[in-house]
Amino acid sequence: MRPGERLVWADQPVADLYAQQARGLVLFGVIWLALSIFWMFGAAISVFKPGHLGATVSLSLFGLPFVVLGVLLIYSPEWMRRVARRSVYIITDQRAIVLLGRAFGRTEVQTFPPDRLRKIASTEHPDGSGDLIFEHYWRVVGRRSTVVRRGFIAVRNVLEVENLIYKTL
Image: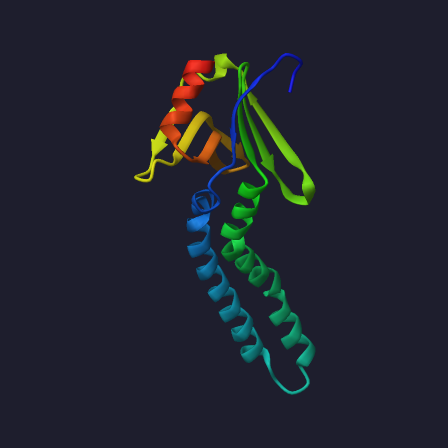
């Protein structure tokens, strides 16, 4: 924190709610994994002939990276829970801060001064938790485009936190 900056509020994301962002990846991962395993066995059976063991093994092992990718996609909610457990949301009297715990012990710091908090989009769930999105934008990489949402994702008592931001900043 900066000299003279005062902590107003801090909390961590709700891990299970944070992990729900990956539920589409799990379904895709199950389908991907099933097709990859089917391909590996199909390749092994269709090529298997006496004297062609090398080709059989090679074609079967070609599918192994795809199997690994499927397993990683299925595992993504647990990875998201780990990110949530290593992340912290902070409100000070000068700004809002998101500390995201990344892989290999790295931490990504996102800072939002008051002028970037004028249009907060909030989503509230029945239990009072939800998201406060400070900014969102399209990120285009090659032909792929994704929406990037930055802010307090999966926070408890979302309306109280939103009011605290408006009151403080």
